[in-house]
Amino acid sequence: MFTGIVQTQATVVSAVLREGIMKLVLSVDSRYLQKLTHGASIAINGCCLTVTDFEVRGADVVGQVSFDVIDETLRLTNLSALQQGSRVNFERSVTFGTELGGHIVSGHIHCQATILAFIREADNCRIKLAIPETWKKYILYKGFICVNGASLTVGKLEEDGFWLHLIPETLTLTNIGEARVDGVFNIEVDQQTYTTVNTVEHYLRKVRGSFSL
Image (cartoon, rainbow, N blue to C red; front, side):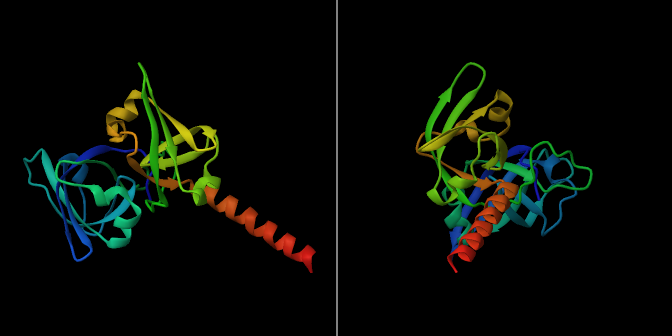
C-alpha cells in the first residue's frame, strides 16, 4: 500500500523489452533505497512494482533498482513509453508509523487519462484530464484521485473531463509538471469511492429486479 505522496523522482537507466516483459532499471538517490529487500514493493508512476534487484554501495550518492514489468502492466500504464533518461515518480510502500499525508493507494492502475489542457500560472498549474467513460462515475468533485502516483484532489467537473490544481511543491517533487497536451497519466481512482459506487449500483439493480418480479 502507498500514500500517494511521491517521495522523489527516479531516472530510467534502461527499459529493455524482451518476450513481453520490460526489464526496467532506475537510478535514484540512495537514501530511498535504504533497508530495501528483494521482493519489496515500490510505486513507479503510481504502479506497484516488485523489486528484482538493487545496488547501493556504501559511499554512493545514487543507487540502482530493477523491476520486471509484465505485458498486462505495459498495456494498462504509461510505463510502456519509458526510455533511457525518462523521469518517473517514486514512492516506497508504507510502513507502520508512516504519516498518511495523501490517501490510501493500492498501486493498481485502473486506466490512463489524456491531458486536454495544461495551464501554468504564477503560483500554480491547472490540468484538464479526460478518462474512459467506464471510469467517469468514480470521479467526484473534491474527491481523491491518484495521478502518476500522486494523491490529488479533483477540481471542477465538466462534460468532457475534470480539472486538477497543482501547487509548486507538487510540480517540483513529481514529473507531472513535465506533461504536455495529448500526453497520458496513470490513474487510480479512490478505492472508497469505487467501493461505494459499485455497492449502490449493485443494491439498485437488486431493488429493480425485485419490483420486476
